[in-house]
Length: 145
Length: 145
DNA sequence: ACTTGCCTTGAAGTACACATGAAGGTTTAA
DNA sequence: TTAAACCTTCATGTGTACTTCAAGGCAAGT
Image 1 (cartoon, rainbow over the protein chains, first blue to last red):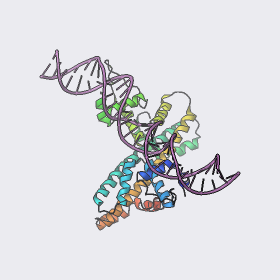
Image 2 (cartoon, rainbow over the protein chains, first blue to last red):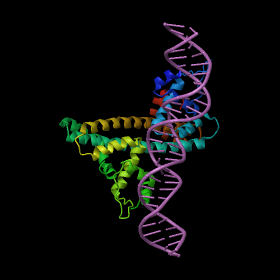
Image 3 (tube, rainbow over the protein chains, first blue to last red):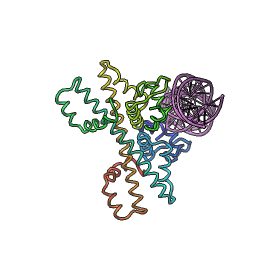
Image 4 (cartoon, rainbow over the protein chains, first blue to last red):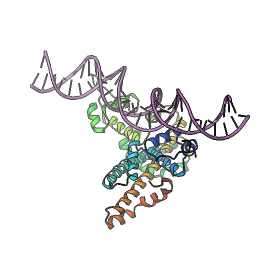
């Protein structure tokens, strides 16, 4: 498939796909005899992988380092482990921030229902959510938000 | 406390704190008679809130809109709900991407142990992790990564 | 009096992650 | 054969989120 189809399939712009290839976030893409990129499902999967990691907050540079570790055949396992665990810690912290924010938003949404237009059933359903107690726990940190 | 102490307390640079105030991500900060910012714990909490939301991937503009909804006393609940739910969806997607990436990293780390230096005990402990089965589920999407 | 060290505002600079534009090539279709 | 609709590379532009710089004020210590 050409780059436009790949773009439509992944939601990543053609320019971004070229950029990812240049930055080695995806492997070198085969060209047709005339020089156009010929993108297969393996590349599509890697584009999706990159999209997820980027969306999850990993920088292009870190992502490239991460990927290069897997492309390299050298015996660099100590650095691999160190990098991966470092990255893991960063991502877990982000996930926790995100979860706290999600819980807090849910809590706020519940309050809207409470004050505005919720039926009693909706309210009670919402009160049972995990979000509620966690949001209350974080109120000390977050003040009025 | 002055801005430098606040910076040290929050890990946010003085310049960034000024920027946040300018962009209304935090409220207007009181000044001392001579014009210096006098930062109290309420502001510290809000700086931390901003840091978490930013780290979680919310843009400055969205964050400002979110905060302004709570500062406003007008009856704009429909827009509030819409914005919050929109933001909630974005954040949940990010969280899921992040969790998938975390699971995958854990899976890869387990493989390193497997091939390199793990004791049998470490290996079996790791095999029991939740990460393992989820990573396997996502292998179809992620190819060799 | 002067250096140190904090602060202020406003303007300008920087890094990242692409987006856009220029100049040109190929293929399909009227 | 001429236009449309893709594609290529390389260069430059753009938006975001700060960072850094410039010019100066205030307060304490020597």
